Amino acid sequence: MQQKGETIVRFEDVSFEYGAANPILDEVNFAARRGAKIALMGQNGAGKSTLFQLITKSAVPEDGKIHLAPNLSIAIARQVIPREDMALTLREFFEKCFAEKVYDIDPKIDKVLEAVNLAAPKDRLIKDFSGGQQARLLLASALIQNPDLLLLDEPTNNLDKDGIAHLTKFLVDYEKTVIVISHDSDFLNAFTKGVLYLDIFTKKMEQYTGNYKDVVREISIRVEKEIRKNAQFEKHIQEKKDKANFFANKGGKMRILAKRMRESAAEAEESKVDVRREDKTIRKFTIGVKEHHVGEILRIDSLSIMRGDKIIECEARVSLNKNRHLLLTGPNGIGKTTLLENLARGGSDGAPCLPKSKAIGCKQQYSGSAKISEGVRVGYYRQDFSTLDFNETVYKTLESVMDKPDEQFMRSVAAGFLIDGDLMRAKVGNLSEGQKGLVAFAQLALLRPNLLILDEPTNHINFRHLPIIAKALDQYEGAMVLVSHVPEFVKKIRIDDTLDLGGLEPLKKTKGK
Image: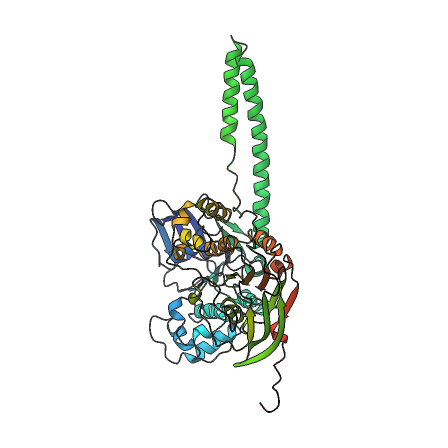
């Protein structure tokens, strides 16, 4: 019989590493009880997603034991839908969630789609859903399994305001156990009652009770106390060392006193506490422009949007010159990502602007009129990082966007984005989603584009980095098109024009045509 409050997951001295040079967990201990709602925090690359893999047994610990309650059912909503699933129909996607065939699955699909506030025909292909709709499908794929333990990996990525509100209400009412990875503090604070913090430096797990903001405040107070305490020890140590040096020079019995002073200083040194190091943040950076383009950079006369199941062409009248920032808004599924994809390809009648642009998957035929002027260099941040070659090293990925090789400069830029020598040698596909995001920003800094196209640039990024990224975008002197569902982020960026796709009127047809 299941009892609320019983321990259903317990890590006992669990260690895990990706090779001897890349330890992730070091003798980690924590427990999760039935009915708990827990936030899992930690810096990008700390191993949060790896922890989920260990719980689901898709990874095996090097040492220690992972205890799970008998017959515990677990489902995980991952960050992104695997590429091999993009060609599946909606029904096939949900059928794949079960090890055995589920008869009469359609009513179950209808129920979970209602739970995530999404309506769609079951024969629709997964690749035809927007990024925000795919985020809802990821959650629905976990919910349809009705698990005892629900693992959510960045569930608010790509969700619009209504989607986040709907998900939050669902989780507040949800009676089973939830462990969620997210960088959205307001979202976490609305329903979590405990925090697991995975420290990237010590490889240990810290466990706290209370809501997210209370825990963050508690950690900050503790760090401040430890810093003050260590400052007192430092003062005491220096005083004893100064006195020891003074008495040592006096000779005779004074040398004995000097020895005591040194011993006292050593004891104080040992009494210093290890201050919990805060997450590293990226350095301040700029996205420069190699050569400023004279005149119009981007023009959009009309564009296609989705309303229900229909594609409607609407008038837009957008013109961007240098130093003009455009915010593109509208609900999930209306066509924001599709528009950005086609802009990155060069517009409806332009040539592709990006290296590896063939890797960009287009969801639907674009029939609007948009054009990027000749000679404009485009930097495109795509929400699923499919403009990056996952089989290539980070080194080659960054080098590929530079006009001429300059390893010292490239490594300096990379270091500012917390990309060290080990990461430079790693394949992009082996990085965490947050690290891929930092590689994408490092690319933009090295590319120095005339036009920035940014599709949900906050996805997967540690919240400590976001003010620095916002500052760089605010100061960007080229033309920029931005899509973001994070109001706090957008507020920090200069926006000159806003185009709301939801408020556009259909093009009027000329009589006789």
